[in-house]
Image (cartoon, rainbow, N blue to C red; front, side, top):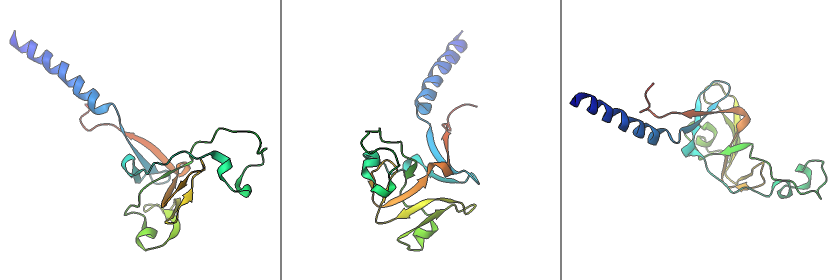
Length: 146
């Protein structure tokens, strides 16, 4: 009789452990062309949302009436910290394109002086990766049973 109760105890503690480790899966970003991992959630540099189109110069605004108040659009890029795979950064450039190490696809740009995000906010220094060139993947915990 002691054996079934111990196995019951085991099954009741394991799901609690699993829910603790799987509550927030880790996000990684891969090159869309060759699937090489280029960044993870820990590498992202957050920024406060800008004021949208009103933050841009007149030339960069859309042709719509400037009088209408629009909700600022979502960011089309992510900003990350400088990483070893960014060869142009390692070579000492101040401003350059960011190319994938695996397939040489253009993933974004960097500028040590800063760049303006699509939401209107300025990020300084800026290492910008375009979401359209990346796949956002969710990694589950290693402890999770298969």
